[in-house]
Each structure stands twice: as C-alpha cells, then as structure tokens.
Length: 498
Ligand SMILES: Nc1ncnc2c1ncn2[C@@H]1O[C@H](COP(=O)(O)OP(=O)(O)OP(=O)(O)O)[C@@H](O)[C@H]1O
Ligand SMILES: [Mg+2]
Image 1 (cartoon, protein in one colour):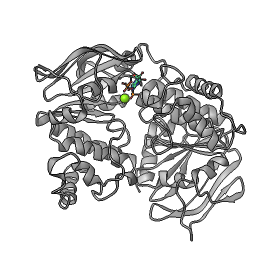
Image 2 (cartoon, rainbow, N blue to C red):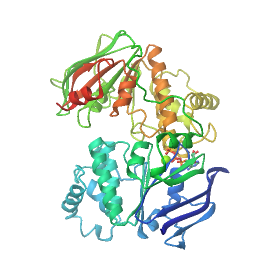
Image 3 (cartoon, rainbow, N blue to C red):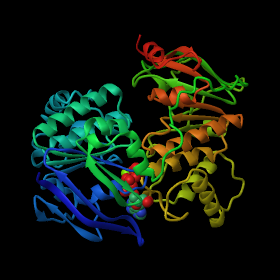
Image 4 (spheres, rainbow, N blue to C red):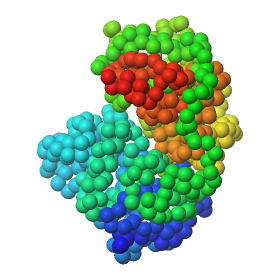
C-alpha cells in the first residue's frame, strides 16, 4: 500500500511545550483514517501541519513520496490537500455560494451563475442549505455543511475533516458518511477526527490514537473496539461507562418555579409554546434540529425577541419579563451557554481570565471600578482547576487552547456569572470522553446547589442520563413531558417526530 502522506518524527512546540512530539503517521491512498485522542492530544496540530496551517519544528513530511513543506493552507489546497476546520473558516458576511467558490479563479466572472451551481452542488451532497443565505445567519450544522461542501468542491486528493459531525443530526450524518464512502471509492484519502468513537469505528479503515502529543497506537479498525480506544486515549481504564443504565437513580424533586412561558411565539420557529422550569432540577430538552428548541431558549436568554404582538408571556420568578438583550437576562441570573463559542463573546486573542471576567462584568456582579490583574489571574486559576482546562498556564490566550478546552472556557464564563438558571445548549459537543463525565458532574452539582438547569441535547443517552424530567420539542413547541423512569429512547424519538 502506498502512502500519500507520510509524517516522520514530527514535533511542534508552542513556547517550548510540545503539542506533538516525534509522531510517525501515514495516510494511504483511498483510505479513511480516524485520528483519535483526548482534548489537547494534538490531533488538530498534526493535521494542520499537513495542511500548511502550522509549521513543524522537527521531522519531515513526504507527500506523494516527495519531501514537502507548505507555507500556507492555500498552497496545500493548490497541491491537493484540503482541510475542514474544527473552527469555522467561512466569511460570515458573504453568502453560502460565495464562500463555496471563494478562491476559484473564475469567481468574479461567475458571480451570476454561482447561486445556481451552488444549489446543484449542495443538492448533490444532500445538504439542505440555501446558497443565497448569509453565512452569519446559519446555525452550526449548516455552517459545518458549507465547510464540508467547500472542501469537497476543490477536488482534493486528501481531505482532512476535523470534527465534521459534531453538530449534524443523525440524518445529516448518514448523508455525510455516504459522501465519505463515495470520496474514498474515487480514490480520495481521508483523515477523520472525531470524539464520537462509534462513528470512527463504523466509518474508518484504520485508526491512530494520540495521547499527550505522542503516538500511542495505529492499526486496522477491525482490531479495535470502544474499550481498546478509550484506554489507549486516556492511558487507563475508565471505571464507569458514561452512559450507564441508571433507570433506578433517584430523580430530583420539582423545586420552586423560576421560569414560566405562556404561549410564546416567534415567527414560524416557535409557536405557542408553554412550559415551566424549576429550581434544583435538571430539565432535559430533546428535539430534532428545526424543532425550535434552540430558538425557544434563545428567547428566554434575551438573544432573540419573541413576536411583539401575540408573542405570549414570560415570567421569571413571578414577574413578567421581556429581555431586549442577553445582558438583561444575565442581570437576572439567566445564563445561556451555547455550542457556538465565537457568537457568544469568547475572544480568542484574550486570556482565559479576561474572558471569564468579561462574564462577571456582564452580570453586573463586580462592584470594583478597577480590575486587578491578580484577580483576573485568580479567577482563571479557579476555573482552570474546576473544569480541568488543559493549558500551558493561567495567562494563556484562548486561541492557544485546543477546541475542547475552548468549550470549557465558554462553560466557565457562564458559571462565573453566578446564575439562577443555566441553559446548556449541547454542552459536551467536541469534548472528549473523560471531559464529558466531568461536565456532567458539574451539571449535576449545579442542580444540587439549587440552580435551575436546562440541558438541550440532540444526543438521547445524554438526555436520559442527566435529566430529572424530559421535555420534547416539536414544530416550535414543547409537546410532551416524560419522567426518565418511564421514558425510553424510542418513546422520546417517537414524540419528537409524530
Ligand atoms: N496556537 C497555539 N499556541 C499555543 N499552544 C497551542 C496552540 N495550538 C494548540 N496548542 C496546544 O497544543 C496542544 C494540542 O492542541 P490540539 O489543538 O492539537 O489538540 P486536539 O487534539 O485537536 O484537541 P481537541 O479535541 O480539543 O480539539 C494543546 O495542549 C494546546 O493547548
Ligand atoms: Mg482539535
């Protein structure tokens, strides 16, 4: 078998700390190669070197048998290596079609035709995205589809997918996997990075596992199973299954009613929805994409506004509220933690502590006019420890963290605001198996401390495992409530589609 890409003893250091160290890796022609490892293991770094985004400090790369060093992603792309980034690289103020064709030579001449050809191309991939929509108006899933489409569109010989499926629905994933298989059949070599181990086992031909920047093992997928992967990733056996059958666990009781929605509506996405949220309890919200679950809670958190007339009513602690901005909601103690970290005011080039402090300021919980450096540093240290954020030190900028660790900063920022209601939208997206358990523990602790917690998730085992009560959202409203004790995945799924 010939290797399209061969990495030999490759290392990359940031401030003398290795992100990857002496890694050997090869990608064969026409294979799907899964690259796995915990948050911060070095997956993005290794692949970014191949795609010309990052330069290695040691070692070499052979591409089609020749020693190669790309000085930019553009150069790598011209030579046949495309990468779909974990962080979106789309231009927000341009349309989907413009983003797709950005960088192709005849972009300008084709401005008129691009909507039509983009439409055809997206349809051929079974991606339901409007080519004329502005990228900034898209949700995480659609952005991911545009990223994928763009990489495929370049007819690359090698495509690197860095967590492509994190925000796709099961149906979209199905199409995406079909696409991967077609690409593979046509001879494209694929690297697939994911925290969804079952997906990696299902789709890949070979698996490579990194831990702390070093290669742990590589081999044929048929020789792996979930347990082997997990213990190789974490370097020990994980004592507990994260999603165990706990139908016997004690559910928390209904506390005080802190939030009530009455017939709340917004456009066609949220339609006359009514429900309540209680303190000291975890309310799980399940719904397919497009069911209006995220839209509903964006209204609660003041990110979006409900319809002005006949938009219904929202009561927070028996007081009618209409938040105009998220800051209004935060001041009342309502915090919304999303999967979209860029959109939620996390600033890449600022430190961990500054970002956390920004949250506290927004909540109006700081009476001091002067912000002391030492306070910021202390805040950073506290949350780095609480959330087990992997970083060189407390002064590191967010951009220096791996994707999963950035997600933890988002969570820390929300929690530092000392909230009464915390709404988590897909809290464990992009975080590794070990960190999922930590974040779940944290969510449980919040509820035990009397805080009202909402967990929106499209992953049913997560909903089943965390919730004290489960709400199902369909066609813009909450349609059913279950107790986890008598709910099954089938029943919830049925309620969400019928
Ligand atoms: N620009 C940077 N500056 C400093 N350190 C960095 C930078 N980029 C990555 N690192 C560090 O390198 C290590 C590997 O990060 P990398 O992003 O490759 O991890 P990953 O395996 O992709 O993790 P995740 O699953 O969370 O995306 C981490 O410890 C990270 O903090
Ligand atoms: Mg990464």
